[in-house]
Length: 285
Image (cartoon, rainbow, N blue to C red; front, side):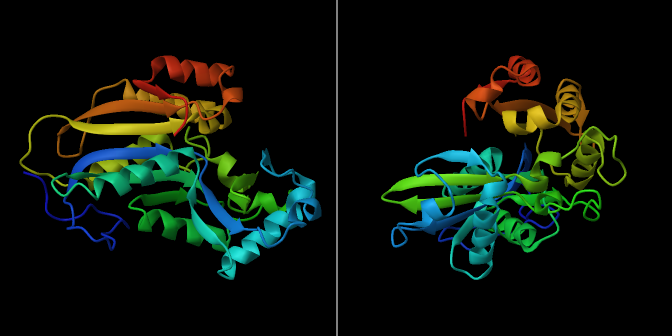
């Protein structure tokens, strides 16, 4: 009773050693700060940590002293000298789900989409490509232009996570860029539509079929996104609490899932409120 064709939009079947899986109208909608992970093996460069002023086997957000590291890693990615993948807590979770489901020959795979914000740069194109290859449809916003009042690279750049691998240890420096500016409350519409408008668009793209019963739509988010766009998350939470249906009238059963993402998020009022209301709450991806 499931449709034999893939869903609408930019998502398509990708090469894998298994038979193609039909796509159901069930939906996994990720919303988070999306990043391009840039991974480089640095065992042959023992002075790299001192040179870039980074403590080995640590994690941190990029500061002014890390600008050279971020620029060099972005250049490495563009030159094919470093590995890249789509990153961020929710993006990782959806890609993991797609990886597992495409190995279940008898399973129907839900449509998986990722909402996020990317910059006006090559990293944005690479991030879209990595998501699509991983089985996730990228529905990513971009700023119309760089903010003239902010001359820093982060004002128009995609979020990136620079990952240095040395002695089997992982060191990460994350430049959030515009990823932290995703806005879903509709106050910046029409450039950045509200949550309800985005969901209406997804509803309209659902193809009618002969199956019966409600369609599960799983909304997956993280403490990272929630603390940055509390009003947008409130709109998503309100949507999940109301009766929903596709444009064809098929009932939708919303399920709200969140990852706390990091310990520092646990004390934030907005994160605590969503954790209490969520159908499922996870510590991490």
